[in-house]
Image 1 (cartoon, rainbow, N blue to C red):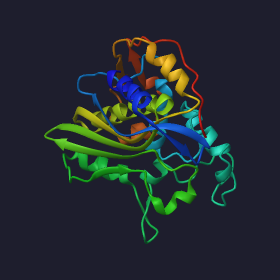
Image 2 (image 1 turned 60 degrees about the vertical axis):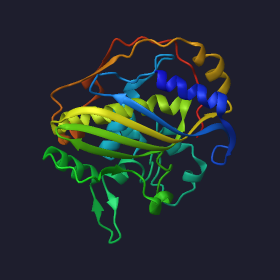
Image 3 (image 1 turned 180 degrees about the vertical axis):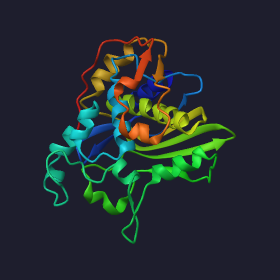
Amino acid sequence: MKQYLDLCQRIVDEGIWVDNERTGKKCLTVINADLTYDVAGGEFPLVTTRKSFWKSAIAEMIGYLRGYQSAADFRKLGTKTWDANANENDAWLASPHRLGPDDIGEAYGVVGRGWRTADGSRIDLLRQIMDDLSKGVDNRGEILTFYNPGIFDRACLRPCMYSHHFSLLGDTLYLNSTQRSCDVPLGLNFNMVQVYFLLAIIAQITGKKAGKAYHKIVNAHIYEDQLELMRDVQLKREPFPAPKLIINPEIKTLEDLETWVTLDDFDVEGYQCHEAIKYPFSV
């Protein structure tokens, strides 16, 4: 929480106003932020200065790992985070690549589970990483990336948190996640949970010890219509102690994660929080 609140305060104090073409709004912006999550120590980075919907964040990441392309599939799993981008984004609605209602295109997990190569074939990046890590192999390039500039026109949104690089030191697994852009009042709450969860679940499945997860944000910003709530409400609140994430130990393979796992297989212990804050969302 201290890392999160320090970044929020830094944006308020040092941020520069930037016009955002996609949303038509101004953003108070800083460049470069580094956060670290102690997965080994069980310090789940769930925001406590407002109510945080951690299940939705985990559902979204599971959807990425499954390669979901439809907002309907994300909804069935337990999150509505793709509804607006799939169905209310004017540029995407006009795209010849959109397959119909709820289609998000080749975004995030669709890319990671089926990377397009020059010859038209596909590479399942996640499967390669899981196979390597399960064997104790680290080729210094165990990278799950969702960023393929050649097909940006085939998706409703470019990936924000676009790269997850796994590293093995002995039997301990580490993660470096990189995010090009972050809506701090809304998105960072999700992204912190997702980075922590990703290392925790991949370590469990591959039989490794979880170490630390390192989260780099390049462009961290607060939209103009979010600033007052952040500065005058959330930053005035005292945080509570970090809760603990509980993962069903029966999740042992990638196939488990792809098939029978639901949000009932996850729980949070000791979560105390302040009341929710309804930050505006920019499509």
